[in-house]
Image (cartoon, rainbow, N blue to C red; front, top):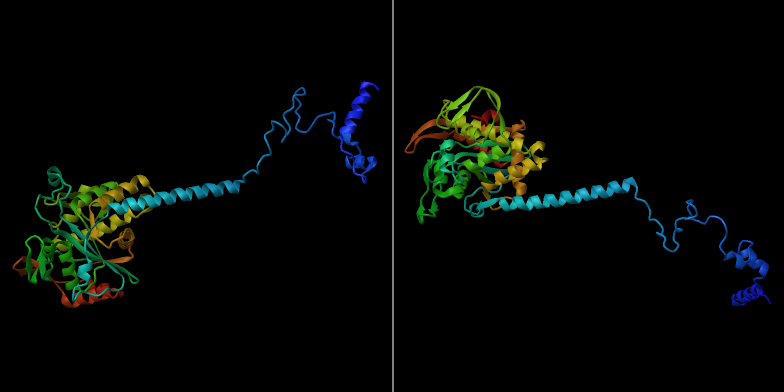
Length: 406
């Protein structure tokens, strides 16, 4: 037998026998009409995956050295979905980080809990009442800055402005309290002198000078019958830095304003004022006949405008402006221990609503702006109108501006 026959016989013997039920004809049909031996042989012609470059085709997919099957392609919608999810995660991380950073800068130093527990203290009213104080604190100012800002270098601290900001279902009201208001200051214990002082009648400003924020809050609550929920105080340096961080504040004046004592020198009309000019404006009290009462109008107008600009989209959506504003505002802002960042946000947006015309800007009704006392000329409130106004705010009723504006 020749070599070809021997090879054929060996291959035949090496193949497993076909099952009895599968005849050679059926076996050929199972392989597409081709005998099993031929079905396993490479077929002539181009193979799957072969290229046309002179017979050097690329490896067939899934074959030896192949790249394997490709995964499903991502649709545009799926890509956009993952991009949006990534953006949300980034914004969430930034927001949480900003919150904790800002919260760490808040100076919670005033304890109102003991005040609210005192016998005779006003009960919690309807709505929310903030006592906002501008102090003449020179904290953070150098001697050169005190001279430049016309603040003087007096020791101790006094209140330069005081107001109650009420917000509730019946709107927002910003109520200024003249610092020379003649009121009864409740008895208190002097922390520095270690002495107990009896109740006495003096200018409202003296309460802060003698007992700080806590005694001032007690005095305001006793004089008005309004429960104070939160306290916020800012000094001269904080005020200046906040305005400068905003890039200035737009202010419109009906007449030129010049005051050597405060350093104010502003022109008639609308203009952008910086921190130094803003401080001079809110402290000016010599040009108008009503002095302190006229200054309170300036303070209300400016604070509402300041809050409006600080809470505007151009500030909130611009991190290069937002972070300096938050840092400048919170560095010197002193608040009560129960004040959260959410409470601060509500306070600023309530002030913003006043500047937008959605609230009232009032002063305590006055009976005598030059009432002679042992403390000098003081401000005497109109008892009837004041009591009506205070009751409306405590109960969150609609304020009768015609009566309460005084």
